[in-house]
Amino acid sequence: MKVGFIRTAVTAAMLTVAGTVAPAQTQGISDGTVKIGVLTDMAGLFSDIAGAGAVTAAQMAIDDFVENEKPSFKVELVSADHQNKPDIATGIARQWYDTGNVDMITDAINSGVALAVSSVAESKNRMLIVTGSGSTRLTNEQCSPNTISYTWDTYSYANGQSRIVKSLGLDTWYFVAVDYALGKSLVAEASRAFPEKAESGIPIAGRI
Image (cartoon, rainbow, N blue to C red; front, side, top):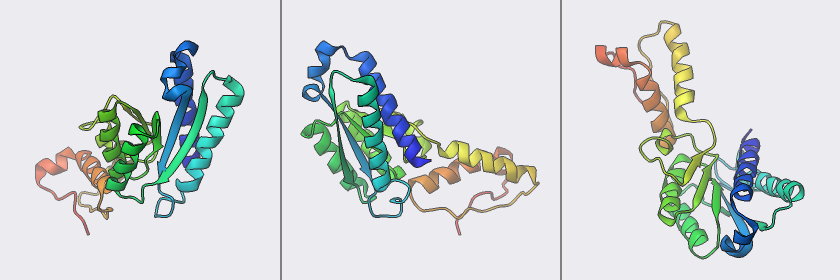
């Protein structure tokens, strides 16, 4: 599923470029080349659902696009390992945007990484398509005109599961959540799905 997300997202982004950039203007985009950066986790806990597979998926999308659309510009792919560290991710993103002629970054798996790189993309006025983070902060308080969240989010996950729990008549429950941006977002969204419990003082969210 993850490979499908990134392949479709990259294809959609390139079709957008092809539809909005006239041939005479292509020299203004990275000297006539659209460069896409896959910023992913190559060896950590997300490497199985992203990593090398995400890079391959992006390259497949590029190959299909070039073969079928025959654009007037070149398309290149670069990739890097953010090691699940927002500081490393932002350093790579800045370098790509500033001197690497990267027009768009994608994947950004890990919510902390995606949120950090989104800020860089906005400051550099470049594009970020997130296919590896579900934090609703990307579409709520940290919404950016430069970032597209092309994936599921914690609102949909949390509310779906919360409705099932609610239908069973259970009134006290707890979370076992990962202690980073994704887990915190899931806990917050699920807690908001039970406003009547919060008003009554019944504990609905905790960590164990």
